[in-house]
Each structure stands twice: as C-alpha cells, then as structure tokens.
Image 1 (cartoon, rainbow, N blue to C red):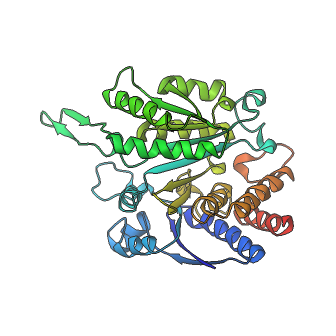
Image 2 (spheres, rainbow, N blue to C red):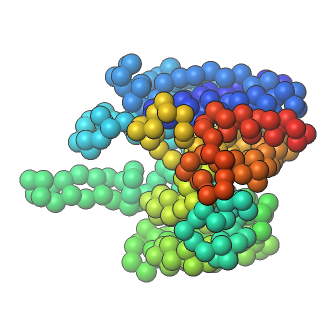
Image 3 (cartoon, helix red, strand yellow):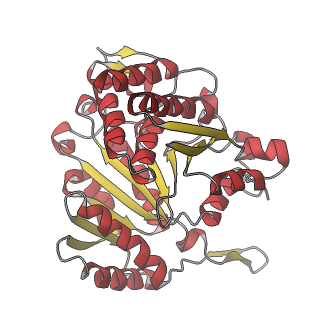
Length: 357
C-alpha cells in the first residue's frame, strides 16, 4: 500500500531533521513492505521569501490530499519583530486552523540511557511516561484581541465553548484507555470563568469513562508536580496556553527539546507531526542537531495516522538501542558517550530498525 506524506521542511534546521525522519520511514517501508510517497512543500519563512505568504495555497492543497504531514520547524531571526504583519508562525497557525488540527499530543518518556542527562534527579524521573493532550485551536491564542486607550491598554480574550472542550477531553480519555487509564485535567478554575466551564465539561465527560481514573489539577500546581513527581501522571489534558507552557516545561524532564516529538490531530486519522523544538537557525547547516525528536514524530505518524503500531514501536526501540550504545548528539552528550552528527544519528537509527526486525 502507498501512503502519501506531505513533507514541510520549513526553516532553519527543519530540512535537516525531516530528512532523517524520512530515512527512518523509508527503512520501515523496506522492512515491512510499505511504500511512502513523499512530496515537499513550503511553509514559514521560506514560503514568505518565495511567495510572500507563510502558508501558500499549494501547500494547503498538498496537505489536504495527504494521509499525514511531517513538519520540520518554522521561524527565522529576520522575522523576530512581533509587529510584522506577515510572520512564519502564521503558517503553522493557519495550517492548524485550516486542517482542523484541534489536539496536540506531546509524549514525555524518559529513555533509561538518558536518565542522567536531565537536571532532575534520576530517582524522581524514574518511570516517567506521560502524554500531554493540548487543545490547539481555541483559547487565548484565538480569542478577540486588540488595543484601546490610544494603544495604552491591550487585551487578549480566553474563550472556550463546550464542544471544543468535549472533543479534546474525549480524545484524552480514549488515549488513556490504551495507556494506564488515568486522566488529569488542568485548568485555573479558581480564577477564570473559561476554566470553570472547562472543569464542568471535563467532569461530565469523565462520567462516560468509568474505567479511567480522573482528577482535576490547577495549572500552577501541575507545573510544580511535573518537577516534583512526574511519574505520577499518565494523560494530562488542558487548554491551549496552559498546554503550551506545560509541555515546554515537561520537555526538560527528558534533558533536551531535541528528544521530544509531537502530533497535531484532527477528527479521524489525519495528523501533522513535528518535533517540539524550533528552527534553531544558528545551527543551520552545521550537521550537529539532534534528529531524534523528528524521527520519533515519524513513529507517532505511523501510530496515529496510519495505524501501524508495530512499525511505530520498531522506530522507538531503535532509538532506545542507539542511545543504549552510547551514541549521542551534542545536546545530550555525556562524558563517556560517542558524539555524532545529525546524519550519523539518523543512519544509526536506520540500521537499528533494519537489524531489529
């Protein structure tokens, strides 16, 4: 069977890491007999440079026609001025909106080989395997905003509807049923009216899943618990801004943002897959960045969009094997490890995929 994958390399190091993810998927194809048809398109800063738009219509059309989308990263220093009317990040936000990608999945699982690279004590990290489900198309990032009083007052509106909350909470419970059957809903219901609606809705949805344990936690407490006892969490579900902040915090549990993948899912099987790190333009072309987050994003693509669980696990096992051998990119290097570059890490993971089956 042929699977159509739209690849959006994007800016900075994006093309370097997506190339290694494609290599991993091609290795899976050779071993299991799948055919992956890749087609590249522009997004972000490179799209602005080429077309004047961060999300060209051609890119959107290719994404809609694909089984899944593999994204690198967007962003460049020349677009850092927040007052610019056209910015690379608008391409990603537009893609989420147009493709109705409403749920962002960010797993945080500590590789045994990397437990000493984090700033958190190993005994605290031991057993950490959590999944954050972040609502992606609502909340303060999409609410009404503006300035008044001659520009002296600014406002951003956090707004959520019951259907928006229901669909992401349902997804969290469905995912928890395949894991350790525990959901924590994170809000700020002691202060925010939108969070009170979130909590009411989450509690009502939870009653439909009596086999899954459920609790509510305030976002500030959750931020503390992620550092104090991260292994106590299974699935965390939360709104857009809270999820944005908490997932970056959680990424540091793994020692480097270069280790963590993510998925943005629509209803059904379609999804967009990307590492959580940015475009890191200062490292562009040096061949030193960590491709593991992008490669693990490809594993998520296999799992959630193509329903190829065995193949997804094969990529994840290959990553663990390579790390256990002591191979490291410099962001996760230890005193006794062998430091290798982006391409060499991708090649090592490909060999492990092929040898492991």
